[in-house]
Image (cartoon, rainbow, N blue to C red; front, side, top):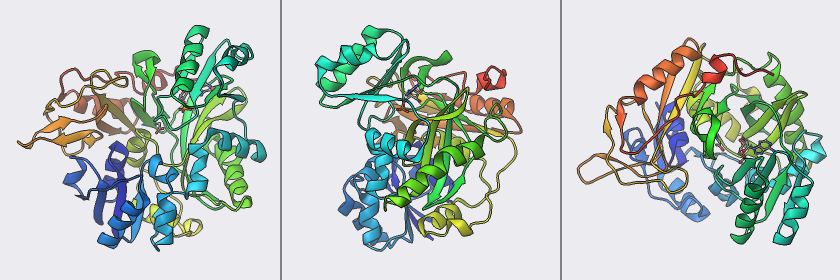
Length: 413
Ligand code: AMP
Ligand code: GLY
């Protein structure tokens, strides 16, 4: 198949690796992806630009990586032009693009989630915060790349964030705090057909011990040794299937990947958020364990034949991905420095470019990802950290505790 992947980060590099053996194109891609696929220039949030690239290469399948093109209606335009597309149409992608829409669908489908209140007027902030606490969850109600959320017991910090978001022109959501360890469950969804992938856990805070600001994700592991045996099935039955069914009944069937971000509390799963795409960096760990050819999986979803796909098969063991971040990520990452050391073929590129001499240079906040695989979490961690220690980038940092709490048996449900 001739496959076009849209995007330019670590997730897209992992997708490309999973699709190897096919004729691969990426728009726009990055320096690492260029080793495995033809990179083409493209405005990913412009439907006509993406359709133009898909026509130019006569793609058999287009896989949309990030949320921005989905929310911009790129999947709709591609489908109208006759392409098989992995990724939901604009109205369905609103499950990620509009937190208010996601809450409304969950309420109609009877899915457990946090109680939320929306504020657009700075004079309402104090009054609304009075109804929440002691843990305050304050969110930017727009696409913020995972960086628009502040979770704090400090009311002044909560208030300040709410003011800053409104001052930037966006509504604010204040939410009740959902307790319990987090789960990222990616599900292939084709109308009412739901096929879960392995459960994973992201590490959202910048520094070890979950300290520092929220980021796009600093590392992940899969599967989750602490999740109850029926955990994935419960999430499918209690969350993803009801939502898929609700979308069908509204005449906006979901087609693509639905990412349920959940907290596993005393009563089981509750939804923190939905994303309309694969998660980054969890995808890097999850796909490292998938044995079924990824192209078959994505193509079945894109062509409406997911129900006929044989059960997915997975390699035994565990996978861990660790993100190498640039100095000052997430606030204002330092870019432009040369990356040296042993960037072996297996390393995933998230934000890199090549300079005139062919060196890789840092071009984003999340720069590289290593993926370790092993017979268990301990071995997968060792494999990942052995790789990341070989890479040098001035000022860069990474978390040393990805999967550590799970390994130490400190996560209980
Ligand atoms: P989001 O961008 O909505 O995924 O939020 C980013 C992170 O903030 C999540 O992964 C959680 O760690 C945390 N978070 C968001 N909403 C809540 C909530 N209602 N309760 C507890 N933690 C939350
Ligand atoms: N790993 C978080 C996200 O992709 O949104």
